[in-house]
Length: 108
Length: 118
Image (cartoon, rainbow over all chains, first blue to last red):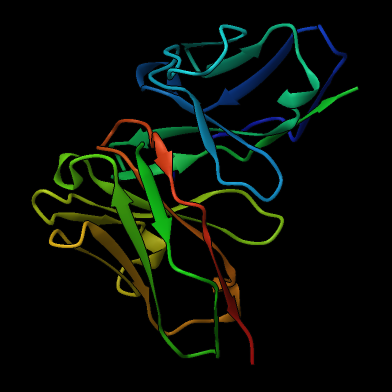
């Protein structure tokens, strides 16, 4: 089965930059989507097709994808960005969506 | 605005079945598929399956194949997810979400808590 591995946690000071990685075999050849989930809430799409932002998502959020690693970058981190973040791909080999293991972002 | 409204919390005994609904509004229901995703307490997201509202075609996660059934009722713009032979491990929040394969899931329901307990 296809596995997407994320760091369990990332801690960042307010105003600094948070980088959340998502590692998977040849993930660079697939479109990656990212979701933000705050406690007790449903996930919210924050990035699709590697680097496209849905309307309403701040420009502080950006994405990249190459080789075996996709990255979600949050610039100028604010307290409201504290949440769990999940990457996701559609794996054509197994014909299913795969979610990453999730990363908890803590704002210090 | 685009919205997915899910049915309320359920408590079931092991071996029972559950059916969760997801009513869509604010867009043409047949224009996009619906995925179902679940999240066990304190755990990550697990994709369960997808249904094309337009064609009725379905795809299921391998580990749930045969126990999960996805359907839609286009007359009421409602999607359904049924799970049979429930076990304690099926205790989770179940979400419906809009999206065509392999695109992102852009709108999510609020979630339905299903508790399996003897």
